[in-house]
Length: 266
Image: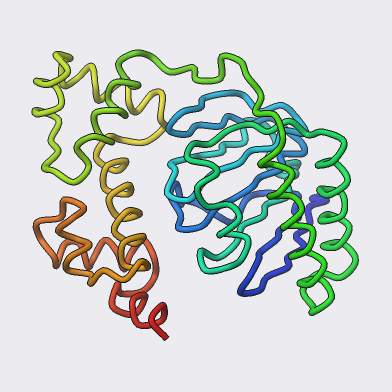
């Protein structure tokens, strides 16, 4: 019998989820908001653009928006225990976050951060989704971001990344606005196409094609939110066929790019 639960605080400014049990978020390796995950318990593998590690209980992950990441529970998903915090790109917290973090990292949980995490957990437990919870969560979230900016980033060999995949990631970053094919990458990096494909899928847990597609969609979404027209954003992110971009964008974000642009301009 499952002992899972899910407590949610959600507003325009901040979202907090304190939960135990299987994740209800699948297939969102990139998203348009900054995220903080306090991994409390179970066993899991974590993969991002710059990290690949087995998570230990009580690990604090800081994931900037548009950064690829996957968290895969490897044992009993019903015991997956976490606190997840994220905030809208227009919120005050995002402005505090912006520019401070470019890559995913593990943050030390020091004597300042630990009580803030407990406060967020207790707020979700006691108040869940009401006005009191939103106010308390926002205040604690602001403190948490402030303390994370001051805290130590834990060192260590967390990359677990082969030279092949690391070079592929760097090549994709440099060419994301251009035409990308496996043939071009293979020629530039002097690595066989099959070697690239197999290594990338094995280490990143996603195909090279899907990684590039989702990264481009995430970047295009960011440009649309910043005021670019959907057509401009698509072209600048390497999409030659707008109808193909439109279809993939709607599938990924649940709404057409023009709707996102209109809602942001209000």
